[in-house]
Amino acid sequence: MNLRKYFIMGSQNCDHDPATILEEAAKAGITAFQFREKGKGSLTGKEKRELGFRLRDICARHHVMFFVNDDIELAEPLEADGIHVGQDDMRLDELRERFPDKIIGLSVSNQHEVDSSPVHLADYLGAGPIFSTSTKDDAKQAVGTEWIKVLKHHYPDIPIVGIGGINEQNAASVINAGADGVSVISAITKAENIEAVVENL
Image: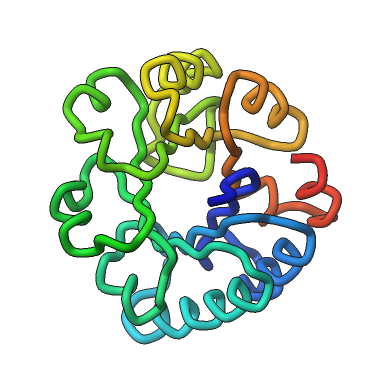
């Protein structure tokens, strides 16, 4: 499971065709992709599903792991490799029972969330927001790279991916804090040169 360069995107994050952006990012070397069609301006129903299939095909061609963000019903038709959930989504034990063979990621942003989650059921943890971010309207307070160190200390065997405000300038500090990977949205969707950004993450 290579989560080193983890790209998250939905059409609402793009000012042009998401498939074109993903194709470029996949060629440039992202290792995982999460389809997160959520929030203001996002697609629903048939359109969302069709975009999911287009993006899934790109990932399959480039051998990039494909995750869906908390849309459980899309996981099977899109043959997703995994599902990523937040604190308000389906519980991990139910998810694990329903999808025993899929990779499951869980977002945690503070100690309280860790204490009230069955962390041992997750295959990896999404830690953040590490830096302040403008991509999510409901983003929580930035926790800094220290949060990575805390999680790594308590869960040395669970891969940790930093998220939130990460870009090519600060990605190294997240990895140096002990993260197994960095996940980005706007660093790629708003990049003038996607290849260069992915290389520098």
